[in-house]
Length: 365
Image 1 (cartoon, helix red, strand yellow):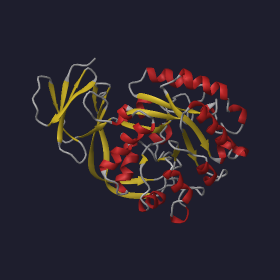
Image 2 (image 1 turned 135 degrees about the vertical axis):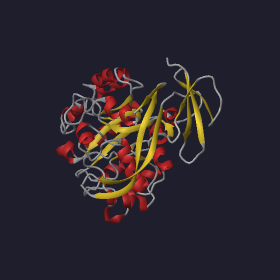
Image 3 (image 1 turned 45 degrees about the vertical axis):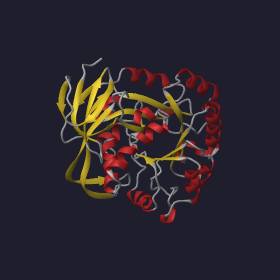
Image 4 (image 1 turned 120 degrees about the vertical axis):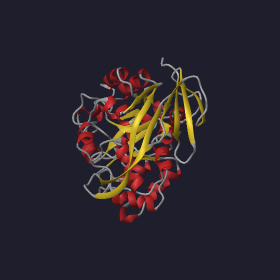
């Protein structure tokens, strides 16, 4: 429980200045800037505010190498109030992530890897007996509310000789659990068109802007199978990562107005410290450079990911909602932006987080 306070003179992108009263770990009141209150007043003039940022694709189990990190390092310290671990853990080790989440300030949810091994190895779908139905069903039942979906990494280095079969099994798991799939796409086989044909409403394609040969935008245009998947309710997610975001592909997607999509980082310690990811804000800044409005970008790291995990309240800035907020600004500075293939773009603005309210607690950077 935190003493009541008022954050004054905050701006919602594209709207007027507001004051936000925080009490009992909730947003008690949103009012026009300058409203009177007996509570402690904190002047936030010059800062934007949104509901707390959500990173839909991270790797947050610190014990995993190379794909792991500390929860709060990729969460609240980067202005992100909710992270969703994207398949670091399978049924054998999801308990470890859940235990760590209880010790962290950042809110944590998870997609469960369809392989019981999770990312304890990087070819976790190369042996089909690791796709253990009973153990997966037990984990989903035991961690109800923490697990929000299932993750299948459908690229050749992961599936080896099994081609599309792990995704067929994942589809069955999805129906048994009534949970959506998040599907990682990468190098073939399996072919991207075979993957798309198996995806259904509320499933997620992550790494949708990768520049590999098996990508969604060959010859400078979206695949018809991609457009069909979007029309039946399949969602697109960025999942930048170390090898899965291409400026040229992103420019094609923008040209063809491929929306909506969530902006996520696929962050872990190595690409946080050494790039090209660094942070969710850094990834979001690339979309500012690509010509998306600030309002569209914030929507893609708040409302849209909240809807994808079936927790729309996390993406809403409203009275009597949970007090999870991100404070940020737009800084004018010449910066170099680098994609996963080392291609560069030069920009003059970047999004910088300046603080969070996490479950009612104000933390200013």
